[in-house]
Image 1 (cartoon, rainbow, N blue to C red):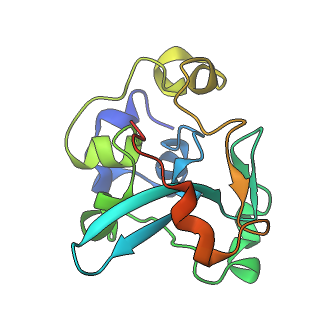
Image 2: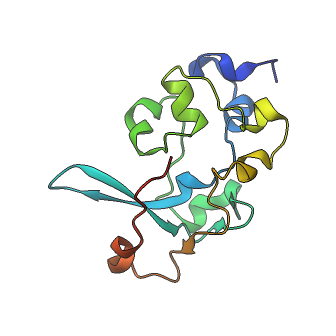
Length: 146
């Protein structure tokens, strides 16, 4: 990978660089609720059943669509249309908005655990969607996901 590739426009990243942007926070794996009457988007602490709540990584990332067909594959072509449902701390969203990465991002800090130490990941506070019926997700809305 190129030096400081994360500072390049997203459209110029190769597939490995694109994947390397992920900070490992796990927030994109949280289920969201969209309220049609207000167009409001709410994050919940209900995570995809494939999310490991301690590592904040997908248990079957490469084959996740076999288990969760509706899982969104984030690509440079899709980022403009779906960046609104990414958390404000997400490297993909930040770079789409031409903002720098936070100091805790492992590409800056050199440490994959810095996202967890900074308290920015979902480590330890999610519940699996396998344990919560969809009609109860509203009970798990998160007020602030920054």
